[in-house]
Length: 243
Length: 256
Image (cartoon, rainbow over all chains, first blue to last red; front, side, top):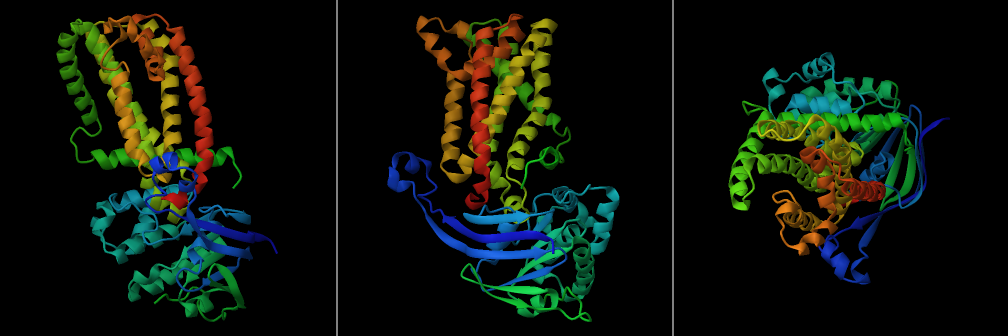
């Protein structure tokens, strides 16, 4: 099977920089002792592959390394040790604001996020994205910060699911979308994942992962604790409601 | 990820998209749009030009164009470098949550200031024309020096960006450093007003050469080869520094 993502023995030391570690004066005049800083081992001994068309789940409590692992896959964090190979384009949706500019208008944000996702921000595409959100046109020109978090998420989901990528890396953050809109979101996510090929989804919600993913990695303190083959049923929607 | 020109082009295109987006965001509510900056610089050049030409006893038709072109380029340098220092912190959400390469935000600071420069440079041109200074030949001779100045600015921004993200007190150090550099560089004053022979030490300042490499031919119609040579060497060194700084950007996500 061809792998789109391959990690071998990946270890990640995340530097913990306090105010003193961030001081240039200290680094310059503080001597050798000031130069070292604390680091936590966020990931260790991670070996896994994501095949084309696979849906991978990452499960574990806060601080188990889910987000760090996604960021290593996205090329955001360089691994301290080990080997990371990503073939093809990744689309990353991580963190609470998912990289939006709250001061800029929804329109401007859509344009920017399309560009980041390698897509031409054509008028038609923006129209399509906006009409999918079912939001009032008046909001299109207003700063994103004037929207509720749910409205903002609709816009962000609409944009990211309009992109083309080989791998979608997603941290769970769809929770704020209202129930009525979830079904619609599901359908769109479904189409996106079908187009994308592979998905890596991190979540606290085990039922969601079971319904969505082929394989679930249980993470514990930065290592893979166990792997569960989950074979989602064909009848159930592959992207399940995130409630 | 392997380096490709297509990827590099894409980063550049994204940076310029973000820069234009910034300009739109900043000036949408102003009637004149970004030309508001032009008016600001015009007022400042007029005021300072009038006062300091009298203070220094230099004819206004010489001092005002000299100051106008100098301050326009100096402002470009200062804004690009200090915004470069903030650039990674400003792009944090895109870098950490979307996986946008950090260098995009350094280029964004450079391009945004180039766009602003395009709106302030006409003040310099206007001052030269109104006071009958300079010539077409002089303007052409200034081109290599101007290119070096812009490159040196961009490279400096690339050098300060990862350092300022890593060491947060560096931004204030850089900002006071820039003020000190302004005081010891010939923007408001010209070497010709320095009567003392002791002023020769001022030539040790690389910024003096970066300015003179284009301003001397622009104002006097004669090349200043020493300044151009020093500028080329300084820009080359800054370029090497920028290449090294760029390799540090891969750790940026840990720092922001």
